[in-house]
Length: 377
Image (cartoon, rainbow, N blue to C red; front, side, top):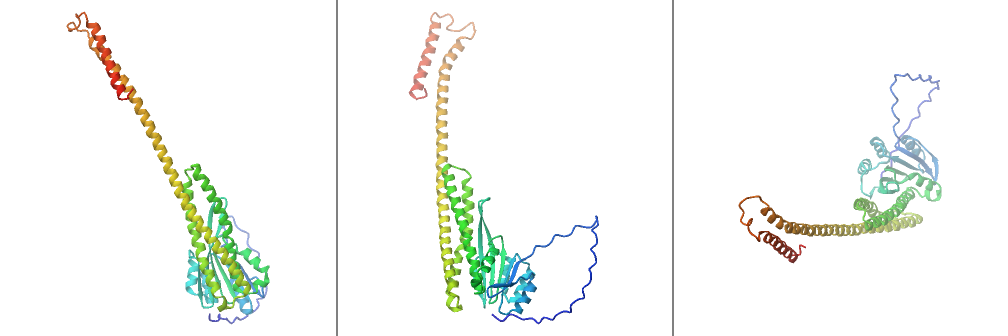
């Protein structure tokens, strides 16, 4: 990487201190003061031999102090920086425009790129939210140069303040330079996956219980967790290749042996996590298949019950219809003979009344046996 540009700085004359005028009292009709803009620079520090020597509050102050200490290392932490701040960092540390563009737009896949002597690393951190029972993903971009580390965070995870405190408590590790800081960030991101794995495992156990309990809302939960596992795979799978690429450059870049061991340990943890995530996704697919089978069986049972109910209802209708037909026959005969006409053939017949009764009995008996033979009764 070409040497960073060193600017000549001229000292301005010291202004004569004056007593500032007292601020005017606010008036009732004054508009409200605009809210203070959030700071993009979360924390910046300058280190020498693993010890913090200063804590500048602005980027310009960080640049100036790093120029004054050629053997120092700057660690600048940013959260959703502005375009102007990123361009300022690019001009000072000679960052590649493509890397700056990626850090500005975010929504990048995990990757490791080398631009001269500067490494550009993109990480997808994750954290498990117990209240919502879901996984929240964050994005972290890291620029690692000969004497600087710049972190650009998009999201709540990971907690880089804890990483900074851990490194400051281990000056022997921090004095190894920017590579040690990169290791600590990778280690923190990978360690952050462990609570997520535990939370997802608990969710899968609950889903299995809900599936066999017949909870109708479990399908939606399986689908949502499957989508989170796809995102988790995208976060962990590329890390395996990234760490192997870093380990492949140990000899070329003279990486410290302690850092080599630590990075190999991180690679083992990433591989284990990636395998667990693959297992979770396969388990969710199996659970979804089992749930679909159980839902189909339940629907078949409901259809069978409806069919049986319909069959029973049909049998009852047959019985009612049969008895209605049987009772209708004598009613019909009685209705005909009940008509009050003077001239009817059977009115003067001696056997007319017995004939009518016998006719009704014969018709009813015949209908009864016909319906009985057809299992309507």
